[in-house]
Amino acid sequence: MRVGGEIDLVGAIVQTMRPRQWTKNLIVFAPLIFSGHIQDVGAILASVVAFGVFCLASGAAYLLNDVRDAHADSLHDVKRTRPVASGELPATVAVASAIVIAVLAVAVAFALARPVGVMTLGYLALQNAYTFGLKHQVILDVMSISAGFIIRAAAGAAAVSVAASPWLYMCAALLALFLGFGKRRHELLMAEDTVGSHRAVLDDYSPHLLDVLVATATSATIIAYSLYTFFSPTAAEHDYLMLTIPFVVYGVLRYVFLMYKHNLGGSPEEILLTDVPLIITILAWLATASVVIYLT
Picture 1 (cartoon, rainbow, N blue to C red):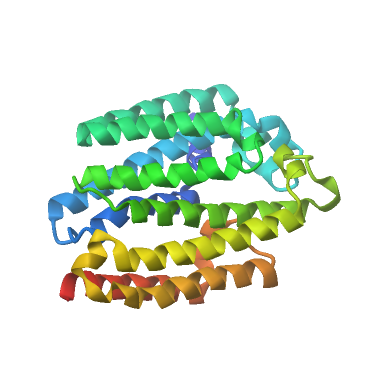
Picture 2 (cartoon, rainbow, N blue to C red):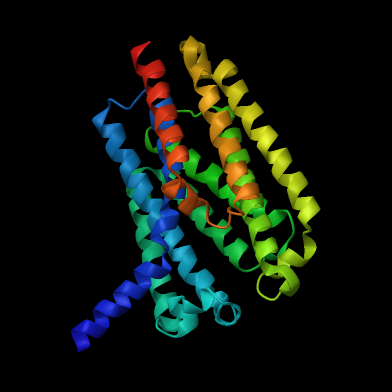
């Protein structure tokens, strides 16, 4: 029974670390792909390690977040089943696990490269600021999520010792804003007459405001990526990078369609992993970008 209990506890810790959310950490591979180093085995391994570091770091952040939100989550129809909120995972164990995992992430990051270690520390600090304050501040809540994507991308660049284009950071940040405001819109619509009962910051948003913010982020994301394909250092070496624009335009607009037609958007990672047209678009974009960068 004791062994079974320990296994259940480990399972609860892993569940709280949100493995499905780790898809966000795939952004660390962007500098590897767009810098033309995909054929460098050492660079690939470094990127994989960086990905693992941010999976650990983000997992530690989720553990602390769930301890902080345990009471509110226990009142939520869906989130009350989370291990910490339900009592399956004791808060003390969750906090201790978060500390151990965070220390491991930082240690591995510094072993990989000092800049990656520094960025991992910065990421953890940002996540704690989000958990204990920023997520209650309108606009800043989503901007802090966006900043996390920039840090991941920068760490990916540092891991393979390349200088990523500012355009790449801009695209990552704007895409995160797009997904973040879309998520807030979904949460607000789902809250209906009980707005603020769980996520207090929703009281400061309105459907119209979020529609405007989503539209703004949609346009900005498409424009920024289009400019990236013309004016970035990568584009200067590969004239046909612009051929990837249609895939990005369709992918973003497909996501907007799913948000407004099917009322999705509350779980971006689920959409990215289950919507077949979007998956095909992402794969086609990756294939086209790879051909342009490595075969032209």
